[in-house]
Image (cartoon, rainbow over all chains, first blue to last red):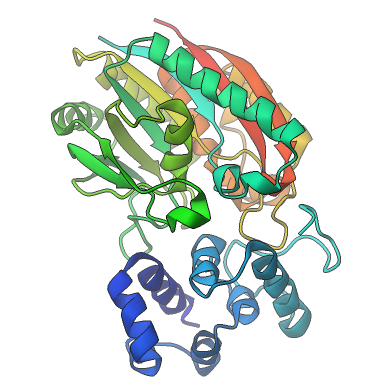
Length: 108
Length: 273
């Protein structure tokens, strides 16, 4: 479990335009800087918001990464639901889903 | 001098970032109450505004997470988020490093705090300022309480911090306003975004208005997580303001607005001797 490293990646990319530049130029090289499990690395390599959510990433980090990837707010919310549908409940952290997959409490 | 004004408000990023998606019948009365809070604050003629906030990994991360941090700079900037996403242009906000240094020195007599000579404001401070001081012309002293990365600041320490802030405010010549911003119940940035526990919020606000220390400090983190979500952890900011102001609160506005992901709250508190 290297949730800390996964979240550190999200923190760095959210806050450092230099890291964002490296993300675009050499994603694999950037990922090499973090001690990630193969599942975490694969999720970050493909921008799999649903899986990153299930792995336990703090939403306050994840939502900005989703925005960086160009996702709209409704798409971000839906990607997390689909992640839970595909991979099961959130495995760590304090951002678990408490509603049902079909619930849309804010209408999105 | 001392505290001349105390209040609390919501800060969820959707309040500005998703404004166009909200029903105007819900949005406009909340915006009006928020602006009135700013008018009341300015009418108290403060020299500086202490914002007790709960940031979201803008400046502090789990590599080195302080329980409390206070800014000590003459200038801050924000928002750290994408301005288009938040709906607030990037700007510079004045601080007062000398005042911060005095306050920190006094607070440290009873509560250990970290200080920061650099601080980029996230939505937790920028959303309130955009309504309260939209010209960004009142010097700000930013405060952060760790409400994001467990283990979280214990509630009784948030109370002790508020008491220390008040003692410090009583020892500086400036007129200070304090605003606490956060919560109340919400499940932000999750698929549950928009879920709001109005009954829990109203109970918390009732306790806050009565400044009932025992009741305010009685929540366990497990209970808060279950009943009020991870966003509920931000009640620490409200608790600090109650400890600092010592008076009775007045609820000006409360209304759940799901697309803003929070029960939108505006309240003031009398500053008691």
